Length: 432
Ligand code: AMP
Ligand code: GLY
Image 1: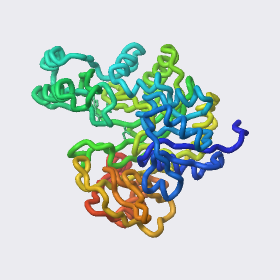
Image 2 (image 1 turned 90 degrees about the vertical axis):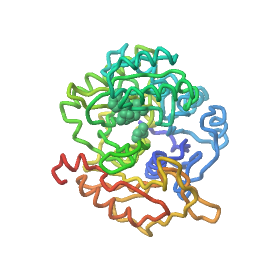
Image 3 (image 1 turned 135 degrees about the horizontal axis):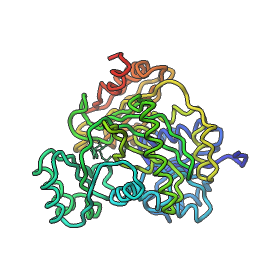
Image 4 (image 1 turned 60 degrees about the vertical axis):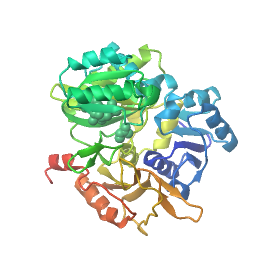
């Protein structure tokens, strides 16, 4: 369909997710040139990196005009919630990612819970509060564990799973009184704790049509065996068979169909990624959260699982002409093992030089997250999730062996990583 000239792409973002999107652009026959703003140390080796305040739609539009970019891929949620795609569309520049109206599904948990209740999408029972006293009174009457969520964006840190009433009260005071998440804690959602196994469902949505990418799972805890503090994600893999054919059917019928119908009924023109975080409970799949962008690190394992050009898909979605039935997926499994900075997820070390392997075996790639390229060309650590090793294989076991053969060849002071990424699926596969 896309017979027009090739694209001059601008990617917004600076993490591992955006580096994998950059790699997809570099492989794409649709792309003539690709730039990144702001980018990171790894992306700087492959493309021009530019400065921009991505949360400011006018600044993004100015950069797009200055660089003569013809297509914009928005990585993170903050620019989406700020209305960057709205501003670009109004100026006639196609962009991949939902409008601000759709981005509210992630930017406001209160809105998202209300949306699920109105459109009968299965999720944890919840109540929303704007004042501390009634929230405290409510929480004291609920069983524990109970989940306390700041409604607004909190860089993935706004959720507390309280195992006692004292912990629940402390979380409410932190959010609503001390304002540890600023205005994001003005409204708080208190919800029932769901027991089960989580999966990340990434949909590429074009209004009524959608492509479900292979179901993936990430590892949020810092320690092996899913112990220790929560992180942005220490690794991920796809596909996962926790989404059985029966779960897949119920997911499509009970969650995805009413969600897309609900968006339409609410007058929301949704085009972009819809990340449905689900809990596979004893009574079926339920929504943990909606995000309006690719997961990080899930994106890094999903881009290589597409045989069809992901940029072509994003372009078709931006233009409202997507045909998911034409998309081809690659067989096999993909894994990412994240290498984190010393101290992560607490206070991290920064500025440590990174040694990378001189060459990589077939099927293995390195994706940068928290890195920076110095003027002298050296690449150093700057962020918590420094790098990820991505490997593809005919089976998850093969992919994991390939990734873990490369991981120890990457060296920087304080580096730590989990040695058990994929263990749940490897157990299900009977190889662990
Ligand atoms: P969220 O930012 O809403 O994804 O929450 C972060 C993480 O907290 C999720 O990925 C889950 O692991 C956990 N979580 C959130 N809500 C619930 C819930 N209602 N029951 C159990 N775990 C939850
Ligand atoms: N990996 C979880 C997220 O991107 O929100």
